[in-house]
Image (cartoon, rainbow, N blue to C red; front, top):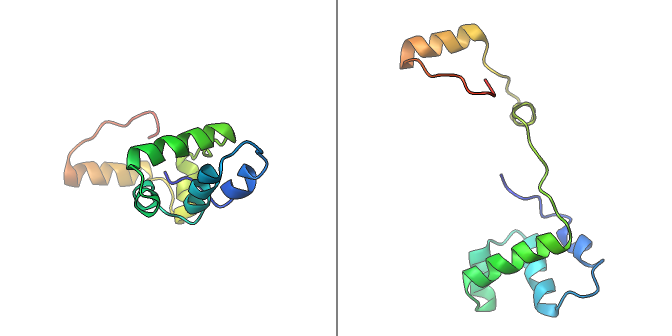
Length: 102
């Protein structure tokens, strides 16, 4: 799941103790750059950037929203398979056990 980074820079501005480097990393993250791209741009290791991002997310108490199967279906304009559709799939491709999500 991708992190929705649209509001991260605004949230970070509430923190007075961020360094200029941390603000720059957060800004680049908000622009959609990956940790590898940020590392290349700032001439730092990807591991350093990854740790900095994790620390920043912790500092602003950012939690990625939980997404349920129903949310994914709604976003994709799909629906869960019916029992008949599952049975037809099993006939064509072999039986698979259902997990807790169906």
